[in-house]
Amino acid sequence: MPSIEIKDVSKYYGKFRALDGVSFKYDGEGAIGYLGPNGAGKTTTLKILTNLIKPSTGVALINGINVNKEPVKAFAVTGSVIESPSPFPYFTIMDSLMFVADIRKIDHREAKKSIDEYADILKLPPLDSKIGDLSKGQRQRVVIAAALMPDPEILLLDEPTSGLDPFEMKIIRDLIKAYKKDKLILMSSHLLSEVSEVCDDVIFINHGKILATDKVSNLSNQFRSKKLIAETLQPITDDIIAKIKKAGIDAEKSGENSLVISYDGSNERRADILKKLVDIAPVISYESAGSELEQAYISILSESK
Ligand SMILES: Nc1ncnc2c1ncn2[C@@H]1O[C@H](COP(=O)(O)OP(=O)(O)OP(=O)(O)O)[C@@H](O)[C@H]1O
Image (tube, rainbow, N blue to C red; front, side, top):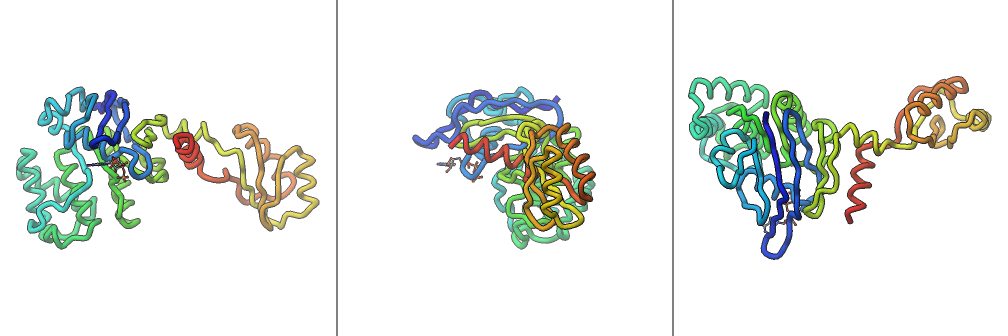
């Protein structure tokens, strides 16, 4: 079973402490979002997991292998995209991917098949294009193809969609969603919407410290919005407001046809309010005000300031 573990890791750059006693462990399949603002310590953690830098204290383990002591063994099961540089600018896409295949000791026939598959999934430009002529997003997609070619059990991605256009973001998010079905992925991001769309678990980090870890679904429940927005077919009159209040609903008019309702956040009460509302006025939409996860993020980050 694939596993990723960081055990009490601290990292100093000179006197500056970029990571402060970070620990987490995940095993099995799925995608873990490593979420934090700029400078939180995400890239530093991923670099430690790939042995690009050494921790000042603590250990990083991939499938139980200490990446610092047995880097080759850990590398064999890991694919990573970290601060993607521009590899081999004079190579064509095909040449650079075949070069990766050689390093990864992938048979050439297998490699060609896999390159064709990823070229299709990632919508790569013609494979005889020179890497140096590609846009940032095209290069990033080539680097992702290179990371996936050996079919690694563990995938470490540092802000994989950063700087990409919406079309490219969708390709990569869809690919991650498909890949996580039988693999373990740790991906950093500062985009809450991305983590909630793609990941099963989330780790919040800021100032080099883990602030919270949870299932994405639990966080949504924990920080469930206590406000609802209802839109009605006809304009909301004083008479309608009076009827709503009489029905025991704490509501305010927020627009010609919309209401903001305060409630205790429970599903039972939410259903009860809807039932009463439709008896009073035709409701055309009824939803939580604001993103629940966004509220979790803001609340967790503001506690860490
Ligand atoms: N080589 C280095 N020398 C000195 N300080 C560094 C070095 N690398 C990173 N830092 C500092 O360590 C802190 C954590 O950086 P890191 O790159 O891990 O953050 P991050 O969460 O990945 O941020 P971003 O989203 O901006 O990439 C930052 O304050 C950064 O300035």
